[in-house]
Image 1 (cartoon, rainbow, N blue to C red):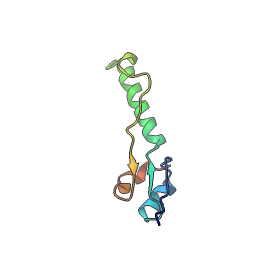
Image 2: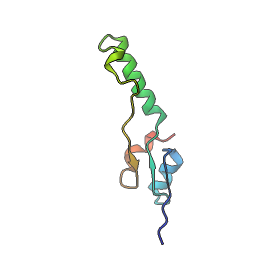
Image 3: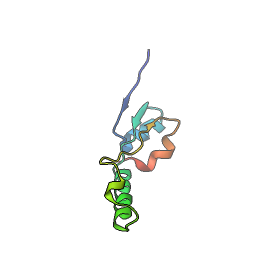
Length: 79
């Protein structure tokens, strides 16, 4: 038998369950990481360091599969 439970929400509850070995994986979906990225881009544009044209129309955060092997790195990113 194989039981696999996974999702793509990055919720704090999922991270806690992964750390406890009760849930297999989730994808990183962190509102604060998205906000940090937006603020960094805005700061670069407002400071004159870059222009809006220097950025892609859509900026993505890096995809991450969070499992028991790396969950400790992302515990503060759950929402």
